[in-house]
Image (cartoon, rainbow, N blue to C red):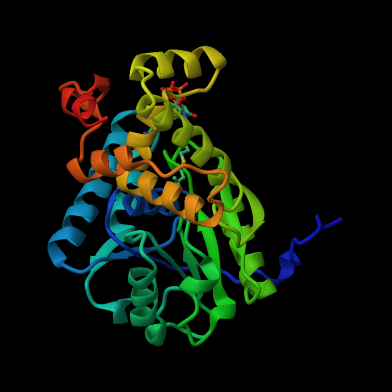
Length: 301
Ligand code: 3HC
């Protein structure tokens, strides 16, 4: 029996080529996942060729690393590397049947990138947004076909975290939702259908957790005590490492959205904004692993 709200699986449309808008870290992580699990061509786009080339080279070197670790065979590595390509020409998305964006977390930017791509797509293509805290319905407000837009929210690190929040707007049609559920399954992720409410489900909890951790420091606790308390309580990751992983700007944006939507329940964090602006929180070792709080961050908070 189908769970409540789940669409008929038979409506899912086949995905034979994936288009990714945005060539940042998150987008590169999806690209690798789509390549490995769907084994279909993946094309990645951004504003300038330099960013696109850098992302494609980065994905190819991730594939080589997987080959080096014996997780992917030599042959498969070669096949996957040949399946990834980059472009700045949105017309190259014409034969993509699944297009997902991971661009800057700003409503106007997300609306704009979809507006640029939509005219090039076939009628059956599905559009997905990885927004963490914007309204999916508003992102689709300028689309000719908002019924084919769905939220598809990954968690960091994309390769490891098992959840995808599939966000249904009042317009999302059943074929789009069914396709998103099928794609999640093919990616070997667990999908949960959520409503298009601020923070969906997970970020409401996470914004509280990370916001309170920042607020405790702003109120005079040391970073180390907050880390020790959350660690001892059993959370898998130090809250500041998690903030760094998510991205300080994304974290600050998520907090703002929650404060805007539920001002009586969520704090703003001026300190997190300052940290995000300065781009500092953790000190890293030569390998890039966190080794403590950066001195400059201590001065800010
Ligand atoms: N990329 C790829 N793989 C990674 C990775 C990364 N960044 N970090 C860890 N892994 C892999 C390891 O290679 C290892 O794989 P293996 O078992 O096949 O060898 C596996 O994950 C486990 O790694 P560790 O032994 O280092 O395991 P840990 O016990 O330290 O777990 C963790 C790592 C799963 C990342 C854990 O620390 C965790 O669950 N952290 C919380 C992460 C979280 O809450 N993410 C959500 C962020 S919110 C978000 O993204 C939404 C946005 O909208 C804000």
